[in-house]
Structure formats: C-alpha cells, structure tokens
Length: 554
Ligand code: ADP
Image (tube, rainbow, N blue to C red):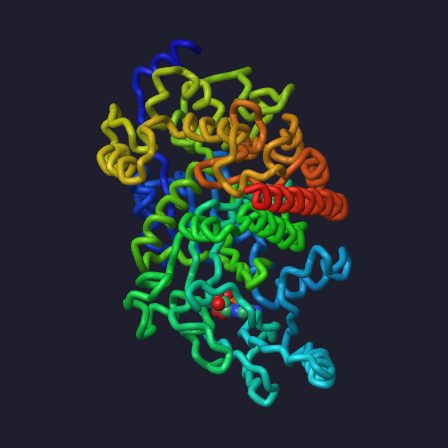
C-alpha cells in the first residue's frame, strides 16, 4: 500500500481547480478564477463531475444538488429566490412581524402586494388622508420581479398609481440620509454558506450608490434624484461631472462612507450592528429551505439609511450585479470574488476530483471529514475516490498541488493534455497580490491569521460584541451531512469566524448555534436576537454617556 502511495507521490500530479460557468455569467468571475490559477471546464475533454465550482445566474435543478460531490460547490441554494422576489419578501416579513412583533421586524417599509392587497392599500391610504394634521405619505410602486429600477413609480396621490403587472406598493422613505443633497443606499454583500444550519457572512466592504441629482420631493418623476440604481444613474447628465461632496460617478466604497460618518461623529458600529440584525432577521424569515450541502448563495441586500440613521431594507437581490462600471466596482467586486473563493475553503484533495487516482488502493483510513467510527468502505464512490486522494494529499509532496491550483506554484509532471492546458498562471496571481497588497502567504494561513485578529482589538464595525465571545463546540455540524461542511475550519471544525472581508454574523453565540442545529428553532433565535439588541442599546447608551462626559470635561 505504501509503495502505491509513494509511486503516486513521485508522479506528483498537479491538478488545478476547475470552474464551470453557465451562459451570461459576468466576465469578472472567469477573470478572478483564472487569476487564481483555476482552469475552465471543457465538456469535450472532461468528465461530467470533473469540476470544483459551478457558477450560474439561474437556480440549479434539484438533481444537480443531489448529485453533488465532496469537491464541488454550487453558487445557488435551492429556493433562495424566496426572498429575492419583492412580493415573496414582503409576505415573509409580514408573517414574521405578525409572529414576533413589529419591534424587531419594523425595518422594512410597509408594503402592499397588488392587486391582492388593493383594498387594504386603499384603506390605509384613506385613513392617512383623513387624519387631521398628518402629512400624507409618499409611495413607491415596483414590479415584483424586475430589477435595476425598471418600471418604478413614485407617487403621493392615488390617481397617479398605474400598473399593468404584479407590483408592490411600498411606503417611500421620504427622509433619506443625504450627502451634499444626494440620496444614497448601500449594496451589502451577504453570503449564506448554509441555510441548515444557518450560517451567514456579511462582507465588510461594499458599495454606496448615489443618485446623481439632488433629492427633491417636488419632482417625484426624476429618476436621477430618487433612484440610486447605477444602471439608471450612469445615463444621467451629471454622472460624469464632478459633484460637490460626492465626486464623479455615483459610487463610494463602504470604507469611504465609514470615514465620512466618523468625521461627523456618527456611531457607525451601531449602524452596522443594526444592519447585521436586519440580515439575520430577513434570512430567518425564509427558513427552512431544503437541506443542501456544498452550495452557497451570494445575496445583495439593498439598505437605505434615513436621516435618523435608521437602516431600512429595500430588497434582496439574487445574483447581485458583478459588472464593472467604474474602478470602485473593480476594487470591491474583484476582492469580493477572491474572498468568496477563499470562503469556499477548497482543500488539496479537491483538486484531484473524480477518478483521478483510480487504481490507488487505500483501505481502513479515515477521511479528514469522516466522523468517528466511519470506516473506509461505508462511503459513496465519490467519497471513496477522495479518500484515496486524501491519503496521498496528506503526504508533504502533494502539498504543492493546491498551491498550484491556487496559482502560486508551477510544478507540473504529468504530460496529459488536460493538465498541461491547465498550467497555473503564476504571474497573474502574484501581480494580483501586489495590486491588492495581499501578503504572500498560503490562503489557509491567511484566513487563520485573520481569524486570530478577530479575538484581538477590533478594526471593523462588524467586530461587535456578538462576534467576540462565542465558539461553537465541534461536532455540532456533523450530524446531518455526509461530508463535513466546507465552511468549517480544519483546525477546530468550527465555522470560520472571518475569511478575507467576510465576517460570520450568524450564529452569533452558542445559544443561536444550538437553536439552528436541528432545523431552525426560529423562536429561540429571535429570543437571542432580542437579548442582543438590548445589549446593543445598553452599550449605545453607555457610549453616549461617555461621550457626553468627555465633551463636558473638555
Ligand atoms: P430594483 O430591484 O428595481 O432595483 P429596488 O427596490 O432596489 O428595485 O428600488 C430601486 C431604488 O429605488 C432603490 O435603490 C432606492 O434608491 C429606491 N427605493 C426603492 N424602494 C424605496 C423606498 N421604499 N423608499 C425610498 N427609496 C426606495
């Protein structure tokens, strides 16, 4: 047996990771994966299962989920669309508000789904009009399944409400936070690596999207003043002009926005805590989703902040735009994609995939992900293949394989066509590192280094009390999966608290973790969130007192 393994080792087969793209996937996804030394799937040359990541814009079939292999990941979760259609989202949030009270679930503007809720809307509208001294609300009407600001209408008088498809009519937030008179909203990236058990990461960097004309309630039909979609504003007359306080274009990074808030003494940590709570509460609203392993969902949460610094959830986007309209897009989205790949936590053995080491016989060995007592012969053919590789992968001579797959080593031995085609692109990756100022350390090491930072001094608004004190015990995640979930760290088999700019926001403590073990115990989780919110409020009061004390003592 050892001889076979040694034999194998001396062959030193280096295989890159393989990505598969469906039609219309944004070019940057391919670019980033190539930069990392991945190679593109070619169905003429490769077996059906000979890939590691399949990225598409539309949902996968359930059979794709059922036939997933341990070395593979899919970029969609089954039924994630439950929160990304505006009417579904409104319905789920309304149900949660009914069940758990509006104190927690008042982050989404009141909405009516048309035509079903027409009578309810009229009732609400008339009630407002009749109450003396109350300024009538503004409303926004949005097609339920369109995006990029298409088909949107803002009105105050019901005679202006016209629609010819399914729409939601939502209360228009008419007191948005303005910077130099311009409206803005946040595009927050959220990655769910599992709905069961629920595991949520938010991305620290993101995009602030500005309207390109000054906010003005007397011109409700001016889309450049009221909508913050880039797809609209890039066609505005002011887009390329220098706008006072904003600059050219229509985007900032979150980093710039945070600096701006701090200059004006705004407690951005609390703001981000509130936003994280919104993300958790929204995703809880769609649980349970079908159990599926080895997939993930990248959502784009659109958050509007009002002039009292209250964040509002406008909508959740499926396939958030990954096109590059400006250099800020490039900076944020490229790094985002790199961090997603890091979050997918590929291991050395994943580079080998199916049947690549056929003929190597390994028996009685435990896989790195197998639970105690599992024997080698109990697993599926896919796992068995991996087990064989795992033995080899554990040998130091195979260590370069993953580095090669990640684009940092160029040692290739086997002269097969597929492998030579897939020669890692060393220079591209190192250029990228330079560009991103990333230290040249192995990816896993990088993640762990960042994890360590987490328990140290905070550098980000995400690093709140909720992240610093909990650590789930091992084994919680093992019970349901045939393979160990990929988002657990090798070191302690716990969800990795931080990967690149992704920060784990759920589970946020041991109780939340327990409550999301066997299915999702929403009630218990809500209880924990209520406790968390109270703590956040107390610390806000203390901070305010401290600040007042400081100011009076100066
Ligand atoms: P789409 O999917 O078409 O982008 P959104 O719901 O994101 O639809 O709305 C588009 C834009 O309209 C938002 O980015 C925001 O600027 C504005 N908007 C949407 N809903 C509201 C609202 N309730 N209050 C204020 N502005 C809103």
